[in-house]
Image 1 (cartoon, rainbow, N blue to C red):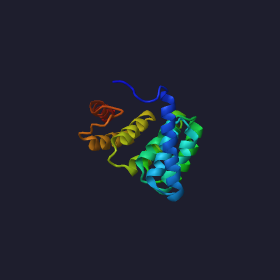
Image 2: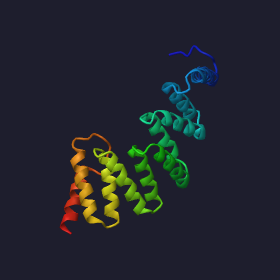
Image 3: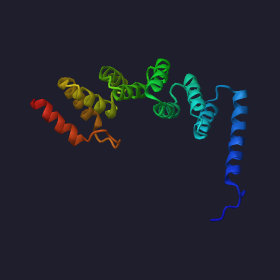
Image 4: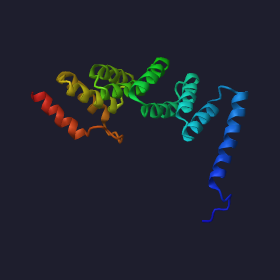
Length: 190
């Protein structure tokens, strides 16, 4: 296949970005709360490797459309690569504005765990699991957290719930079903 456009792919790319940016900007001037335009702006900033601007743009999407999963997912990805303290600060603000998103609580839990704060990690993962009762990943992570701090009864309960909701999940799990069953056998016998 022969490329028939400009000899300079970067100029073509930047030209496309400028056209897209102009179109989004014009649409946002006419309709400042347009869902597609807000998400398009955030995504473009993200792809242009402007994380601070992209974070602000994704937060703007979520202020108007708190159920916009694409914005939340991309925002969590951007926040997760920052320093843990900075990420926690932004995630707390996001969670205050969107308390029904278990993914935010789960992300904060994992950062607290990384920082060695098991108590807050367990509290937040419990909130995430309560917000998404059918999410096996949250329940498995909660079980592992309880297990690591020696709370066998809470670990057993979380492992049991994880097995219940895992069912035939094709989702990538942090622990296999067989490993969960084996750990349950061990915890119950001790």
